[in-house]
Image (cartoon, rainbow, N blue to C red; front, side):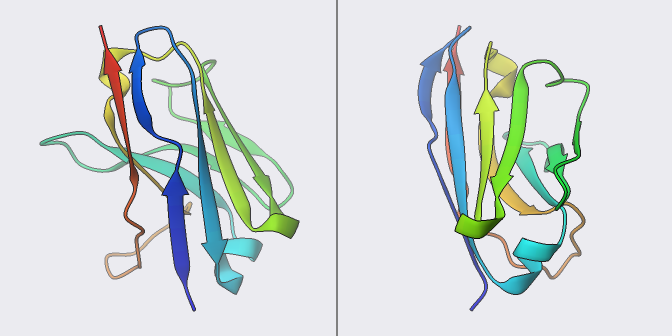
Length: 116
């Protein structure tokens, strides 16, 4: 059964930190590159961080130096450490494969709200 369960979001002040977790079920999530996405109100979903099976990472310019993605393949977990949070980081955060198609499954996401 394919499943993605994100958690760890919340309300935090500007400059604060959060750690997001994603529990995955399904072979594709274990063997393919994974990513964290976010969608702010009235904006398109964007990929902010990605990690390959071997641990190579990449980041959107807007979060580079502040966010860190990691994964524990044995535990079927993907994490996003977010530091120095800004109000513009406010969004619903999702994890999924780093490359997705229009019909792909998505979890419910986790809300991150950063107050100024």
